[in-house]
Image (cartoon, rainbow, N blue to C red; front, side, top):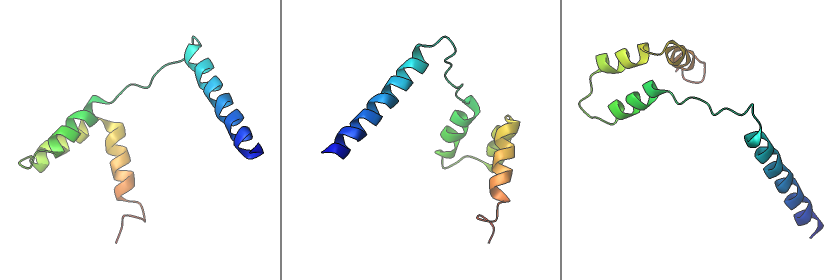
Length: 78
């Protein structure tokens, strides 16, 4: 019972922190990447060409960098 009350207090304090952050003047939501949205839509199309996928990825250098980083990671290599 004590543990449940302690967990509830932690949850409430987290909710309070989130509420405080949202209500602050410094709060900004991250910008959603439109290239990723286009890429997801294209990847769901069975007839999409690799050239189209490449062109979409190259529209966003940060995304291209992350894809290369992931592709070259030891976890992905076989």
